[in-house]
Image (cartoon, rainbow, N blue to C red):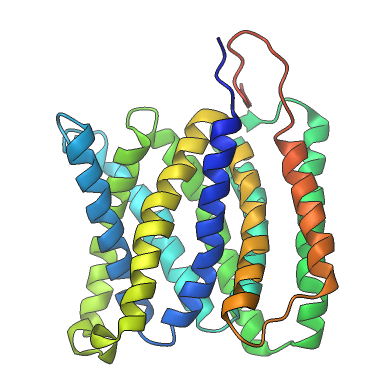
Length: 309
């Protein structure tokens, strides 16, 4: 009996809510501490939680650190943890939470490109790719008027950096799927977090994190805990469970919801980031896009949610 994908859609939806909130949290915390220090504590917390869970669920929690797996885990840490994290945090020092979250709407495009190039993965029906176009147009509606009314050069630079982070994330998604051919999502995230934490730790030492005022600021720790526990631990784990079970392309389609949640939460939590009428239009187009990308597949025995050739 073929397993229903609905449970994985719900898991991905929860992850997208947390990731939407990450833009608000990151915008707050980059005003308190430098990027490397933030990344170090975020992934240190997330990494510890991954290894604790491994200790309770695996007989050999460190058994996946084999000679064959270490290179791919290092690549996971370099792309999705360190590479993405550095671009994400530095971009957020320049742009707003809402605009940063909106740029995340480009993620499904990069995820799909790398999934096709690396795994030869495609959607079952060609017309489903219209979903990407619909979601992309939705992102344009969300960002359009806001960019025209509140344009600044620092926003442009920050958004370009954030776009670079999305490209890095697309590569990370496919690298992670390759890693999950021989490791579980939990092992991939734990190993990647370990290497990413080490890389961020070098930068944090250079920043002299122990002497920063942020170390005694409760706002810093609340946001770092949110980023470490909910965004990194829960969000990353749920995302990779989705990739493993319904494929990188369709899981990536859910990332179109990050702009929706990001803009909404930024308008609620942060002052000066209003929601325009284009937000509602964009929301409808994004939901339509995700619905098309995740259209129920034909029953054909053991056919996967995405075809690989």
